[in-house]
Length: 271
Length: 275
Image (cartoon, rainbow over all chains, first blue to last red; front, side, top):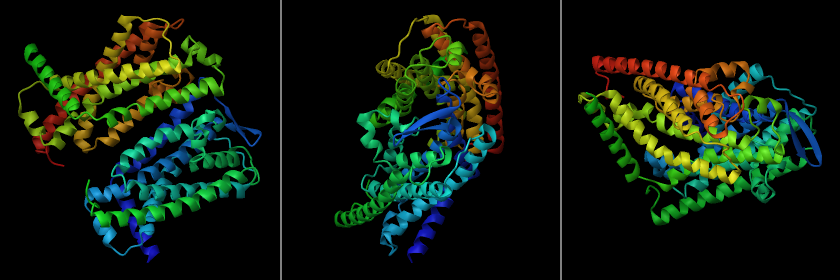
């Protein structure tokens, strides 16, 4: 039952996302353009490499790789932010009551929405990776494949978990799309997407550590471009695993709370 | 004829200004500054914290100055202005159709260009607020203007707006034909944002990117505006001025033709209000 709800919700959201051929083009154009924008931001200073300090070591990373990894993870992250507005859309379509009246598992609905965004992201991932590797030549240095795999999988899952959590959280607000959009720029700034984390002002670092993207960026960049091993990125990987558990528990609690409150106050479809 | 066009222009501008301010939203207003603040903040961190205020020699020779923050502020402010002023034109007919007023608009004997220009004037007035606000925000990040050539400053604004008006006219044809607003405007936005030299001089970009940037009026407009505020060494003013005027004439010419063609086609096939 749980699996069927996840798959059905995924199918529905994927169909809604790829409703026209233009989406296919646009899903590629935006991250590609944003990536180039961030890449060119470095040109007044350097054109080859970026230094990333982590755990008392300094890694010299290829600038193209630094930017493309950042852009790819960020695009996924922002898709999850916007996936958080899924219940807003249900409410606008007038289907939210029907969804919550069905005996479908709530967490399965949330997970299906988040996984649909993750699936839609694959198209973008392939296109961006292909174009950047062909046109801009990413300089890759992998020493420990298991570390890279763990970094990608844990980053992916932690961001999906956050997406699920946001979906459950935004249902309380009735302004999910706006909050999802508003969060994008601060996260770009704080997560180390644009510049290495050591350059983030110290007073803001606490906020950076609350974002799974921060640790995802560190671990994927270091294992893909800096030749880091699993022991080098053990701390960010452990933190990502912790975030996955926390976000799923929080999402489960939030959606139950939202449903209970809405039933008591009969405010489910009100704006 | 000229008096009639002027009346259309003023009436359209008035309607659009009234609509904007009647439904003013502080949240929407604040959201408009997210991207410029993020870019300025990122540039500030890169310049001061990562590279300790040192730009490359290529940057200095391309720009004729070493102040990166002033460089990026001008680009950002200019982009915010022309984007909100000129790209509104590209969505005029789309919104007319959505509002159900497109048929009535095209039935009136008014000059279409004057109508579009009216929309642009209203948008320009609104975006002047954004333009000034970005400069004020940039002062906090360390923006400094070493000179202020009034004539060049306003010429660059007007000429770029004129060229982008042409692109706006063409965009109308695209949005009316494909019934799409978001994809078209966002693609144009990305194109201008990446290749116009907002965050780095065009001369430092790869060859293929430089080729794209040569076809964008914003590239020349930004350089002219920077020259009016920063006075770079060895700057070739005539080259950019000629480039911008040429592109303006070409784009507006094509825009007028495409608008006429699309109107004729929509009338012929009775597709005005069909989605």
